[in-house]
Image (cartoon, rainbow, N blue to C red):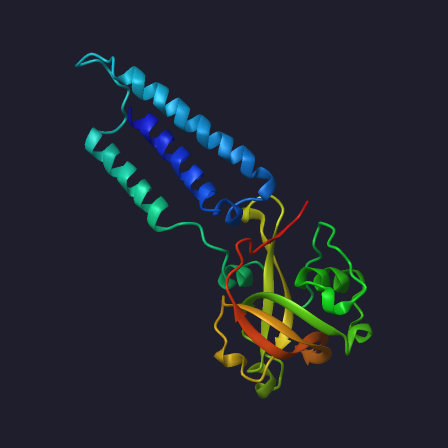
Length: 240
């Protein structure tokens, strides 16, 4: 019976995350219908097992590997974790662990849209454009209007004043699920960058310029406005 309850609980949690719109924090949207079907199947399977269990005679072997009290305790812990610790967007700490501090961003594997108007480019569009045409001089003076979450690596530009004004604006790209996510970023320069919290989401407008960071000429967005925004319902960039 315990195994049936566990499967049923997993199914309930999957459907709960779907109903709350949390599955998009874990997997690519194209897989959401499959996960929902799996949740329904798990609940149905668990229900059948529980109905069969009602017909067990006292003393009949149930196949339990653990004492009932321990099994119920494990189920309670699972339920509490699933309820109290819902899925959250990947953090700036995770972005740093996955290479966000590298100055030359990894080229995304999927095709982002390329726009002719620089002000219409998203953060992902800028990263894609820079990956294909990496010469920073061609973008100097172009306007940008992007959003993402704040990442604060340990800068060492050789200019202490500049170090305090720089941060990264990033997003995660997901091809399948959160396990394969990787960050894309752009450096931002803002006079009061030290007051901006890591992981906060910001909408930023400004103009592209070149700064020397760690001995390399790097395209940097010189921010003119920085506005904190709510975390988007779908905070990732999804690959096809």
